[in-house]
Each structure stands twice: as structure tokens, then as C-alpha cells.
Length: 40
Image (cartoon, rainbow, N blue to C red; front, side):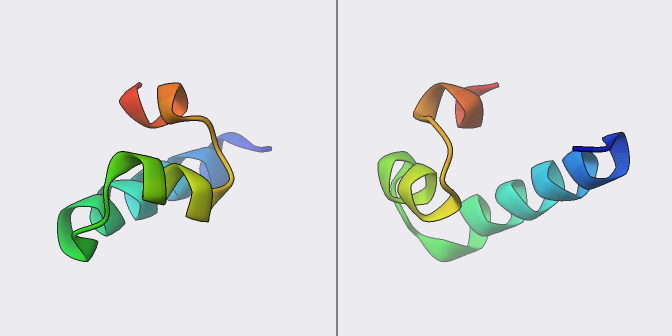
């Protein structure tokens, strides 16, 4: 994954976490990443 894609993923994940009302566990499952990845 290129740096630009990683930055876009981080921004999208942050936006989703603020606006969706999902728990971290739900977000991790939906995004296909581990919860520890979201904590970073």
C-alpha cells in the first residue's frame, strides 16, 4: 500500500469513527483491520 493510500485510509477511518456512531470493534470489522490498528 502506498503512502498516499495509507493517508487516505487513515483520514477515512477517522471520519467514519466520528460520524458513524459505531463501536471500535464494529469499525475494525467493517474496515477489515485489527482494533489495535485503529488505536494507532
